[in-house]
Structures are given as C-alpha cells and as structure tokens.
Figure 1 (cartoon, helix red, strand yellow):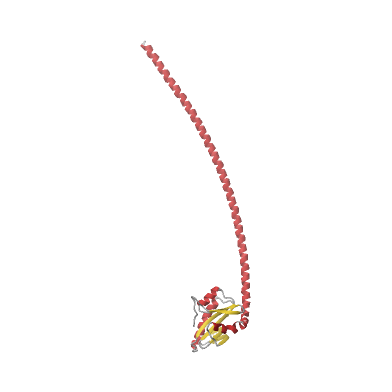
Figure 2: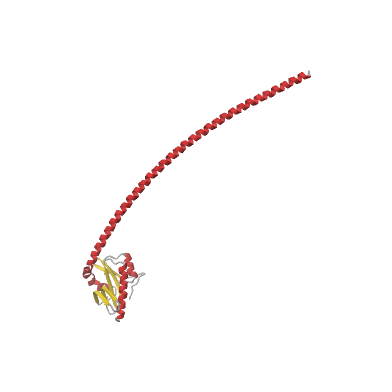
Length: 250
C-alpha cells in the first residue's frame, strides 16, 4: 500500500516536471520568435535608415556638385570680367599716357613761346609787383650771363633786378620742376660766389616763375626760400614764403 502510494506520488511529480519543461520550452520558443521578429524589425529599420542615408548622401553630393559647378561658372565669369577690366584699364592708361604726352608736347611748345609772353606781361610789371612787397629795385636785366672760367663760375639768369642793397634773381619756366628749383639753388650759390669775388656785399634773393606751378613744386620753392610767381588773369602774382617757410638770403 505504501509502495503504491509512493509510486503514484512519483508519477505525479514526474508529470509536473514534464509540464514545467514543456511550458519552459514553449516560453523559450515564444521568446525566440519574439526575438526573431524584433531582430527582423531592427534589420528592416536599419536597412531603411541606410537607404535614407544613401539618398541624403546622394542628394548632398548632387547639391555639392551643383554648387561646385556654379562656383566654376562664377569663377570663370569673374576671370573673364577681370581680364576685360584689365584690358579696359590698359586702354585707358594708354589713352592717358597719350594725352599726357600731348600735353607735355603742348607745354614744350608753350615753353618756347614763353619768352615772348614775358616781354609783354612779366617784364613791364616785375619791378612794380616787387615794389608792392616792399622791394624797390632800380634796375632790371634780362638774359644775364656770367662766364668766369678762371674761377669756374658759369651761370645765366632770366631776370636780374637790383638796387644798392639787394639783387633778385628770377628763373622762368613754363612748368618748373623739382630739378629746376634745385638748379636755381645752385645758380644762387654761384651768383653769391661771383659777387663775393667782385666785392659785391649785397643780399641775393631768388624767385621762380611759371605758367603752371604744381603744389609740390610750389612748396619745394618755398622750402628753399624762393618767391613764386604765377599768372593771374592778364597779369601775375608774386607769392612770398610764409608760415613754416621764410625768405632766404644768399
């Protein structure tokens, strides 16, 4: 009786174990199936994401290619425009050079006639114009030349105005340059040396006259202590150095 009871209990226990194993196996199968579904879904989404990335990358590449092509076109257009502007600049520069050369030629011709203009405009009024500035000159000489080969002093002056105390040396150019003014300084030094050798103790002053006197040349003349003579209507004005510049005596 006891053995039969134990055998019945053992069978009951074995059935419960098998039931548990079968349940476990079923749940494992369900879990595997769920995992497969989720893995399949994950793979699908991964594939979709990769496809979307490829599409976006292709779109980005296409857009980049379009931008690069547009940049090349704009660069080519800019290069073309630059070449056109450079060519235009060269043409205008050539035209400006031509006009400048023509102007220089005209001024050169004017310089050749300037002596005639001095006769009728400058010379008759030069003494009176300096008198307005407080200088009374009693003599005026035109085209004065000094030739002292013994002392190596050779010079010339367009106008020389003088009195008992002072001598004014006037250099006349159609368009005085910096070099012209430097040469006038050298002329003044030669005139001073010649005067000293001949016992002339008078003060020597200088002036530069021009039909056209640019600002740089005018300042340079003032810096060297010269008067500047420029046209004014049908006559001329004599401008004295002032401010930071002062009249120089040799």
